[in-house]
Image (tube, rainbow, N blue to C red):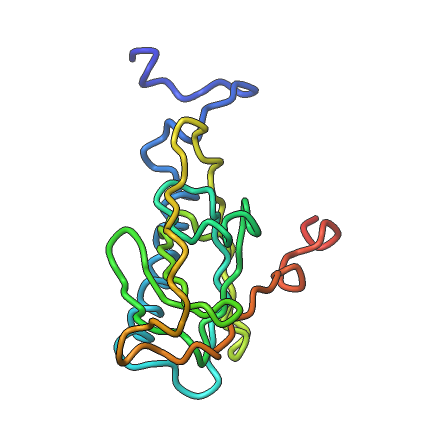
Length: 180
């Protein structure tokens, strides 16, 4: 038996990230597909009943796109709410994109699946939390230009008076006392 085939000795750490059967990552990937399917249903059919989603994501994650003024306000993390006033929800293999209103301005967000740290549907008391690795400092996050004022919005655009809420999910996070 070669050294690579031997089981690790007691007290010797094995890097989980080197393991192709990293069950934590496999589980998180499977649970992210639940989020993807939920958003796909919302994109195709809308949100039924009292369903609404709180989605927290890393704004500094590679591929996350948002307007500069939103990135300045939410440099690391942002929570968005998809409930009554969201438009153009598009679900892709690597990300989703949605238009929300912030202070009367419509903003398009692109959120990579891997940047999502939490997903909650409070109407059914369902929530998921994910670990998100720190982004590499060499890659700067993409920024979208600030949109034109709502007065020059194209025909058929959503009304500019719709407001989005940014909230924190601290109430849904486990406290240190509950983790033990």
